[in-house]
Image (tube, rainbow, N blue to C red; front, top):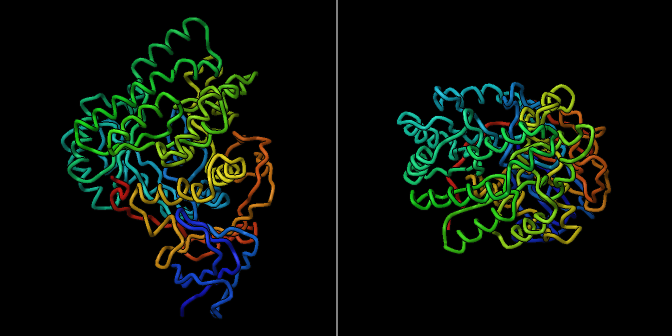
Length: 464
């Protein structure tokens, strides 16, 4: 028997259109859109979306559930993290499986499958962190693409942990040019940063704010430039993650003006937070330690402009939460020992809607950077990221007038603070369908661990 859900009376917003329409869902997929009231569809369930937005579920292409880092683990499991994502209107995440040095890609991917399988409230995919480039690794990249893991992250930062040198990066880029994979780059000059960290600690500069001071914007820009040119030599596309500095945006814009397949992602923390947060007294600044780091406020307008001009294409969260008590506190007296990462998977869609309210971006651009483009960039479109016949019924009923105050007291992420504590936003998720199943129903959680399934991805659909 086919299960039917009808969503009536809402404003359907996609990256390309805004139309008042009724939406018919049959089982797991969207079956049809029609002029409001024009179709007398029978349904097992009817959702009244009058006065609300009907939008695609968010696609967060950058999360780190259960990530080992700095002697501890990210505090959200796949179960708690995907539940929180659903509360925030995100219905697909792409998390990062980790290859450890001396181990194969397969071992890392299998470990992440084991963490996620049966535990997720929403659908998920994987990128692969490549920490050890060798001939076997390069062959494995081809095999992973066949399995729907089509993007590979490398680090110019974290020597001794994830770091790849320019030769390793070039080899992986050359392979991706052949097999259609997309290289994602953490672009910071980690070798130089380590020198500055050592010097700062020797001077007695141990507070969290120095984390931002040693990870200089120019070292992000330099690494971004180098990654672009290595990709150009390899003839490969490049996706630069968590862009935070205006100088790095300028490098991306220049490359795109040259016609290169170079793309950039930023995150809500760089759009809404700043070094003022890192400088909060009594070690409170540790809550805001992430890499790339928060920048002075003057960088924010350049990031917003990059999102408007499409020099930046995606907003993901880099969700990597560590509790203040017992985890961030590992770095008391030494900022370099503070676990790097912020919570945010639950806040992204609301913060970006606030950006619509504030006039930074349009409604359609909101959906483009949070749903459609990440789906296209990482081979999930049009299964994900849009509302159209045949697409997965990942649908959010969004109340654009509801007001809320973001707080650790009310969020669902498994972390003891909010990076946006006390921030007032207009707009709130009301109901969420994941493949036609209600996960959030009128602000009540109705989902379950194990509903979310691994979603294989095709290669990047966003190339010029």
